[in-house]
Image (cartoon, rainbow, N blue to C red):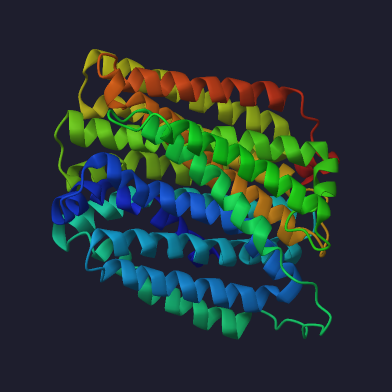
Length: 450
């Protein structure tokens, strides 16, 4: 499960440093290239709830194999793509494969370990693997793009995905047979949940482009609102909703997922800001930019050892607040480095703070988001948490980076604008976290601290 999580996490960020090479090969500008990143994360986030529901209804092993196979096939298509349009389609399929596979994988881990110290330890490993995958994606992208070409950033994961498929067949317990009267899937809900953020991001990105028709931005934003309202209406009337509305009765979990969106938006924004500063402003090549991210990767590994102990001693809410605080400090550091026009090494303190923000914030939020789950709703809770992470990251990039680097704001420092927008979201998350009661089991985690 962790190997699958690692390579899916790698694919979230591995394209960032390769984007200039992809654009040069297909003669595509930087603004259009962002859809390779945003399209993947939004499709993955929007379809995650469907993936979680599929696992609950059809069996987690079956769904795990289906999603993993689709992800591997899409990675192969991306590496062999003849043009940019096919590459975007392949990225959308990768996101769909992730959405199907990851909730089943996370639910499998959650149900393997009882709530308390053992589950917190397992989720810490899971989060550490994901965090390292996200950061090592930058390093691998630089190495692979410089020596093998950008196509191999997609092809390199294919043999490992085959290993995951084989291991899942041999090691994961078989599912029970599917009942003949199994409830139908809520496909309209899944489509509306995906369309809402896609239209929102499309509207935000187009708002910063000169020459955009006057009707396009309001139309896209109105469509996003309509899709969101339609999703709520469909879920309220469906016999088998994708996301049962009673899920929101647990206010602690709802707050945890809201904070996840805001924190993920800040973290994802920081990754692109690092890339843009190192490559575009300082002119560092793909290999050098990738190697510059090594301090972030090493720090994440250190946090993966430290955070489980802190989670047991401090509790989940304190860890979440610490993660938000570290990430906010990182945003201030990025803005300062940009204002001073400092060298690449000046970004290392910001990278270390981002590592701490991910380590403390993500683990604490994952623990709260799946607290109190049962076999019947583990897939839903896992899917919601992952969807919040993916959609929050994609929306954060579109809003913070899209507005900050918009041509219409060329007179302002884009790094300052982006960090200010991200900081506003983080401070909102801090207020929500302060008001969030900690899970009752968090106090018992100190039994495992030693």
